[in-house]
Length: 348
Image: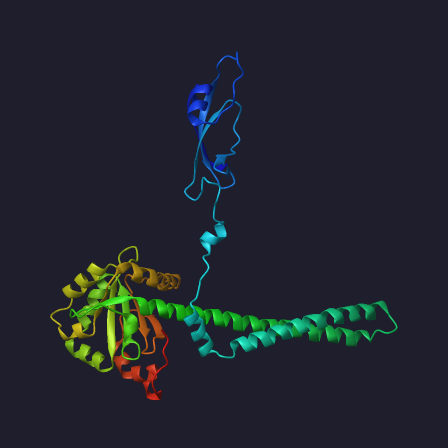
């Protein structure tokens, strides 16, 4: 059945057939024959209603086992569903996307119908061009017919491209909004012992800096965050969330607090702006794609670190590797974050 097969010790066929429940019947009076018992791995095409349809030589008893993805009842989820799960967006997220771009659907419908109209015109222009080449009396000149074909083909291509671009832009915006919602749902615990809270509670009040990395990265970050620097960051409404990543790029809550406290070097005011992850698994799941992207770009989050800078409105300002440049961050944050232009809109 496409799996691995190995032969075991020989024995008599009726005995193995009785034990396995599968085997060839031996006619009465026929002397016992020696056969082999075969282990095989059954693929999904071999399991039908819980029975194996593996073909074996005559007289061989077969002991089959299904792989972990097989359902012995005969039901099996298609492979495409396992590898590519369908992403479901909430109604609130879709409404947010429409608010961000209220005329996107209008453009998609307009360009879609325009592409369909141009496609119909292209069909008839091809027929006309065929008549022109065939020399029909009522056909236009060949040059005119070819010009019509080119214009209609260009209309189909351009309108289809514009509609497709708007659709992909909407999907990307939905994914960004969903990522913002996932970030807002993550829980943190203040370093000064206050109650646990979600990251979304900082919206319109604080700017969030998520700094993830290995032990050396966090120790350097903690040592650099002196009381003077912490006071300056507090004045521009910045909170810092350090995240310790182990060798498997997983967030370890206890190690984050331990590494940070060990390298803090007596700083006390920094506890007011520092928040530790409250649970490791949600943070690991959220940072997985960010870490994968960094590694594709040949950056090592363990040594270089990974910084995610979030504005007051919940939008991600930028992603960067290395230690945060606090001086430039403090000096330009008010301009980059847009507080000079009024309260930012809500994202999550």
